[in-house]
Image 1 (cartoon, rainbow, N blue to C red):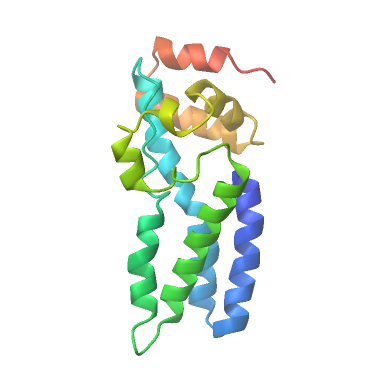
Image 2: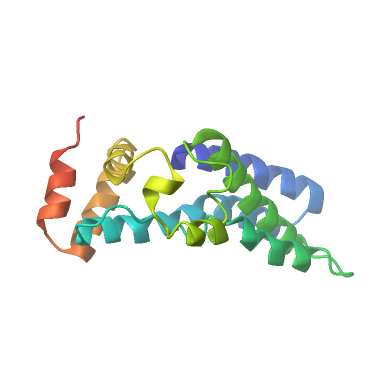
Amino acid sequence: MQPPGHLLVSIGVGVAIYGLTNSATASAAAAGLGVLIDLDHLFDYLLWASSRSRDKLYLWLHSYELLLPLFLWWIRPEGNALALGLLLGAATHLLTDQLTNRVGPFTYFVVYRMAKGFRMSCLVSFTAEDAFQRLFGIPLIGHVLVALIRRWAGRNATLDYLVSQHRP
């Protein structure tokens, strides 16, 4: 799912969490984490832009394993609205990605990605070039992210090639 979709879903989850807990903090945590998990894409974009190898996909925050500590924090006897907000924000993000992205059923398990050597070709049915095309397609955000990636990765032939492949 693209960031605008995650934003809309996360706002809905945040509103629901507020209704359940009456906690503005938990609501903001759910909405915020539901969007901010996508920051791990920057790591992969930087790797792709700064090297010739574009067949690695790490996505460290896109991990069902991260839900376990949040769940354990939430079910403690005293409970915790913030933990519930973070848990549902992260879980909703992962589930919407699982349903809307072209990925296998185990792709969002870090252990599975490790077993596959983080090889993108073994995990998803798209390439780094496809991902850059999708990045460019996000209004305003895409061009800002590409500018940031270019600043961090430096100007190089790989990034110039990926940018040149963009079809508006």
